[in-house]
Image 1 (tube, one colour):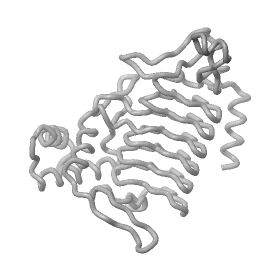
Image 2: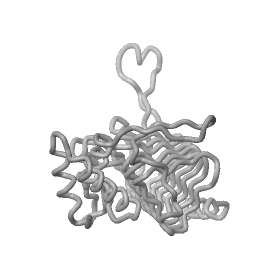
Image 3: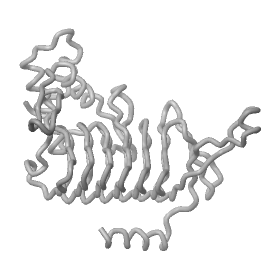
Image 4: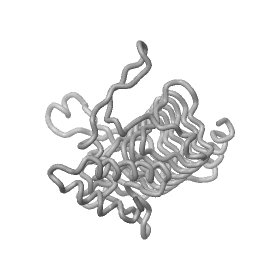
Length: 279
């Protein structure tokens, strides 16, 4: 099936009360192949922003809906049970120069790893995820369903990039080219990290977390129209803000926040260059 035919085919199958199994399987396999080749994406750069391809998410949901659960594993040590179309991916099948280091990593069917990507163990890359050229995914990291990670991104150990599969029109988590995510960061609910931004270890971002820009004296917040967005080249550290209410005042309680303390300069560039040399 040609790629230009897939969106309409998936839309029709998704609307059907009982999709034809053979027809659905053909469309799903074509979609997963296109995702692994990088020809289809859940979201893609468009006109200075990002465009959501809702049909891709509908196709993934169609796969969950129409596929049977099957057992797999290596008895008696490993046991798994998943939808039959979502097998573990062989990254070498693409012919790209991808390194998946031994030690418990799984790249799920329908994920894209570009040339030069390195995945350290154990890590997990979920269906619909897109990881750009030369990016590093370190140990205990998660690249969630449909997350978009750009070129030359460093995803440090224990980073959690949440998946956004539903609603299909929601923007997934996006990390643009050249960003650096410090250890233990968490990005959820469609957060967008601009190109070249640096997140210090432990920064947690979601729709509910305000981002305080100390450099420009403003507060970045998510809205119904746009996700929480980290500006390009911002350097973000974990912070806190005072909680309101009598109990909060009496106990000195604080709520999580994220703080932009600077924007990348020559000193920051040198630190990242050292990190790249060590890698």
